[in-house]
Image (tube, rainbow, N blue to C red; front, side):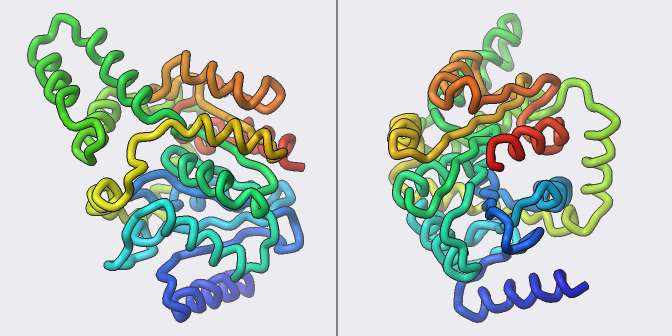
Amino acid sequence: MKSIFLSLCLIMSLFANGQNLYIKTYGNEKNKAIIFIHGGPSGNATLFEGTTAQNLADQGFYVIAYDRRGEGRSTDSDAKFTYEEAFQDLNSIYKKYNVKKAAIIGHSFGGLVATLYAHKYPQNVSALVLAGALFSQQETYDHILNTLKKKYSGDSEQLKRINLVENLDKNSAEYRKKCYELAGENGFFKMPKPTAASKKLYADYEAGEFFKTNIRNKNAPLLFYQNEKQNNIDSRPSLKKIKASGIPVFAIYGKEDGVFSSAQIQSIQDLAGENHFALLDNCSHYLFVDQQKEFLANIKKWLE
């Protein structure tokens, strides 16, 4: 009860300071800090919190989870949804919790936020972990559409639909949305063979309090593409500079994550290095749930 009360006090204090951020901490503040950055735009940290945050803290870490401004539980009608805005809020979290350095785990779109932040503020980052993280956006979109064209090679209606998406402005929110809609409809984000452990994690999450606050701001992607010029990028040049600066870069991906091609996965493995890379079997996009045991074991091994 005491830890819940303290977390609520900290959440309230952030709101009182004009920063409309939902944020919650797990574990002992004296332990090594980890900041988790969720996917999106329009995502939130509820799945990570409801399944993994406390278990990661139990490995000996001080885990900080939050929803970006204007997304999830961090409601803010004035949010701009730019990377710079995300950086400002991350810096406010460091200051509020008196964190000098933290390891950052970026999931999905959160991987782009994490990478660009580490590139701009290397003094704040002890390690960068890409967890099912985007890093070459156009390659991801091309892979989704090319995979589906092969799958539906004899289906004229589906091919027409894919062709319509291909002809959209590639730097638009609509293009991104339609690519991911097709990916979702075709099971690109689903674990191929759910295990008893993963089924329980998902079921407990859906029956719990965090699922009730799984808020999605449908305007977030639209405003991001309206306000952010870096809306379709390849972050590998930044990752190389981060690694060259002395910050360790780790990468962990699901073998059956349908949004990444084998060439993309090989490129990120080459960049991170063999001992800094893990590819999890029977695992898709939400790897911290699909194969939580292996996910936690790798994070503990790398960050300890």
